[in-house]
Image (cartoon, rainbow, N blue to C red; front, side, top):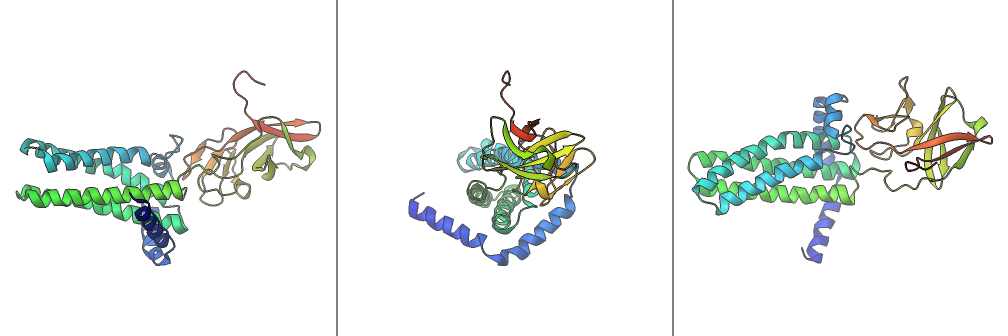
Length: 294
């Protein structure tokens, strides 16, 4: 793509991202998805907490690869190859079901520009899949040219929606671990006096310019990254439950204080956990050292 055309396309996406007129449609879809996929095990499975990162990108490969192959076979293949194309289209549409569900589960908690771009991404993908589904009508009636046109149009829409999805993820940072590039101390670093750390109260401290949240319970001190991996919410403003888990105040992701693992989404990436100790009247923290080091 030429640089000028690329800049024009990026400018168009930025304009759409700031267009609040899209909110009424995006909000309606988010409300519908929220009713179908409330917080719970199903949503957690779709957002990928069990995997350690979002599951949607991996699922898209199966859909795009299958439908791209189907389109190519239908355009240039023999009559036998076109029958194989029909099978691939059916397989691609079946694979799209969990792919769409996981994408919507990731997007339903977004807001602002991310929400609007995600809505455009969803509409583009939906229109592309609809073209492939509708292509079976003329195929069954023997109108091969119409079927080919619909499948080619569908692939074009999916490719465009894929570009929008890349912009949303790689330029806007949606779905990226918001704590991935934070710098945490590798050596024991004092962050607060022990007497100033209150029992059963989330407390924010700073080490090396990075915010960390501490929690003391029965003399045990837990230390996690304060920035929620999902959307950057401050865990210090969250709540700790009786199971030793902290929830983010923004989208209610729940993390295990001891391990940082995701207990409930929408987060899919775990929180960074640090070691904590008392030393000479202060609380010190550091990243877990590699195996064999102390």
